[in-house]
Length: 417
Ligand code: AMP
Ligand code: GLY
Image 1 (cartoon, protein in one colour):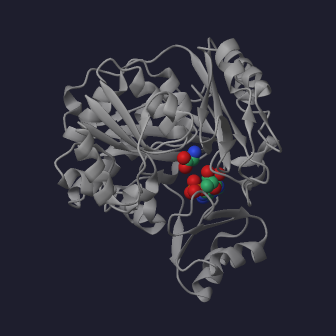
Image 2 (cartoon, protein in one colour; image 1 turned 180 degrees about the vertical axis):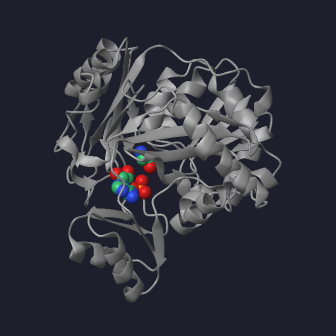
């Protein structure tokens, strides 16, 4: 089958890498892609937010499946446009993608479905903001209602900072602080059947030791040796299946990838947020461990036939990914810097360690940085310690002026903490 992937980050590179290894995929296209994806897929230019343009491209290419990677096109209705053109698409409708597009909508769905989450207030006036901040106390959790590319959430002990963030949003969700480790659990669904993937952990803060500002994610690992082996079953029963059932009941079935961001608190597992697409960088480690060829799984979700899918097969291996970000990320990242060392990683560290591209582009023969998160260096090993060692060995070969990365990705978990 011919597959078209929409997007151009490290998540899409991971998706394209897996799809390129799938014998059922006869041709692979990515639009718009990036310099790394060009090595595994044929790139096409497109405005990823323009549903008509994406549908026309899929028709022109004769795609049997379109996979929409990022949230913005989903919220803009790109999956609806492709579906209307009669082409199977992996990704929810604009209405169902509101699960990610509006924090208030997600809270409403969770309340109706009985899904455990932080208690919260939706506020639109300064008075409501002050009441909600006062009701919960510090640490304050203040979330912009709409999509904000990972920058809409402020968690702070500082009341003035919490107020200032809230007053800068049109509509804001203020909620109870959830203590405890975070887990990302993805599920693939066709709107009825729900198939969970393996859990991963993401590192959201910019600096070692979970210091510094929130980012899109600086690294990830899977599996989680410290997690309860029953976690996936529990989240399926309490969170994933009830959420999918509730959206179907509302007449807006959710198909595609349902991402549950969870906090494992002393009082039980709670949903921090939902996303309507694969997480980045967690996808890099989850797909590194998936043995089942990917295209059939995504097509099953797109065509409502997931119930016929055999159980997913996983490698015993552990996977770690380390994000290399630009100078000054996440504030105002500098771009246009040359990236060196990519060929050395491919020659010396492959196939267990490899570089997935996020914000990169070709400039003549050179590959240069083109975004905040630039590369996601991924490795597998027999355990987390080995995967970590291989990933950091590859990271050390990459030269990008002013770049930054965390040195503690998966460190605690690898030491059994
Ligand atoms: P979100 O965009 O909702 O995932 O929030 C980004 C990050 O903010 C999460 O990964 C958490 O680290 C943190 N966060 C969000 N909500 C809460 C909460 N209720 N309690 C504690 N931390 C939170
Ligand atoms: N890793 C966080 C996200 O994809 O939103």
